[in-house]
Length: 298
Image (cartoon, rainbow, N blue to C red; front, side):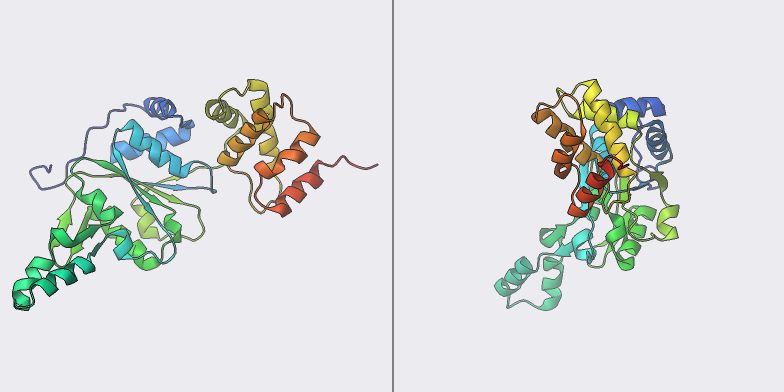
């Protein structure tokens, strides 16, 4: 649906405050702090994409999924990787079917065939085009955008600026409804200023002890508050060490599940040493934490 000027219509936002956004996210199991809820609220009101940066495993992707849930929208996800191009991000033609059509109509002139083979029947939608052509509003999650090359980033700028794409054989495709866009970045490279200007910026860091404790209690059924508090404080302490990969929230949850599965009621040094492989992913980090836990020698 478009308005009288031909601009894609923006659906009404059902949340009237950051507090309402936070409560809605919590209903999906995503425990957002006040800052996250406030940025999401503003992005909805202003109709702007959110660029979410932060270490791996702090909940950037899960935020996009939770937003799709609370808005009851379909999630369209573009997983970025080094070397991804327009054919994988936007669209490509089904060359096999086109070739079969050409072989079946060998007696026809090219001018007659060209219009037949470059139509909807042979178009393969990729996530960006799928989100733009969606009749009902969707949440478009562009995951790990910092892994794409500059050329592909330029393609994203066209999409985020006008919510339209150009297909030479078919013309310009304009969105009938504006997707809610979430871009995530692990900050492995600097994104362009042009891309950043089009977004509201949100940095998600590792949670405070209180929030991580709440996350553990929500995500690990049967975990009592005392053990959750011990686990959250220990993980916070481990993250302060110079590790190759500090434990993410998902690894913190795995560790809490490990403690629960082993029937551990209280965390001591022996328990920590025995369960570090559930929390850390590199042997050098396991050794560094184990060494840090050694009692000081007189």
